[in-house]
Length: 274
Image (cartoon, rainbow, N blue to C red):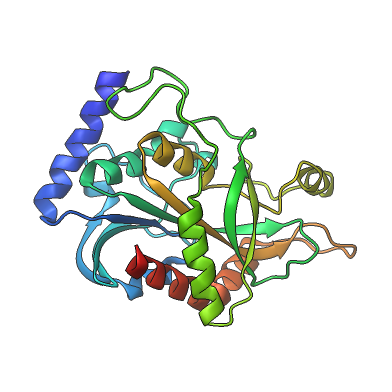
């Protein structure tokens, strides 16, 4: 398993290095409804997932399916326009495949974004929350199985999964723009169903602020490989409310679209500060 996986990563890396000669230092993963951030990047090369050896292909509405290479705030970056989710039927190892490839391409800092539901009563739809920690008991750990020693240690430390120095820089950026940015804990569930009322209450009780269906597996893989991780959630729905209201994917995408300019500004200026 280990040697086979490493061979698959290296095949993808070899292919991508032929497509784009420069070494990206920052990797970016865009969540549901946040794909327009690609327009912030001075695009130099786009590569469709289906053309990359061993790469999965995204199937979710609201997600595109290609890697973008180029410049952002003077840095060389690679961005995923469309990520992979466990609920699509992929194995956890498939979900993190692009993260492994990014690191092997030279990426040192990984920026993650997602759309999330909130259980924090001080949040409202359209808020942006910096993730300072996560709870990952509900999705399979992507490191289960034989460890690939060339990539990282068997038992990675997760005491600082999201780097404090990046969080502080992002908060300072938000302050200069008078953005009311929240900070808190993200819990990942499998999806694809939105949570029941009882589940939202449970998520709140265990100490989370927001809940989503991505990000955590990617963060674990990045930490395993020694990357610095920063992540932000856009609050796209309120999980615990008194009146009856069914959440739709369309509403999630609309809320993310409205909040995207703030997230884009923070990401852009954070990349400049790295």
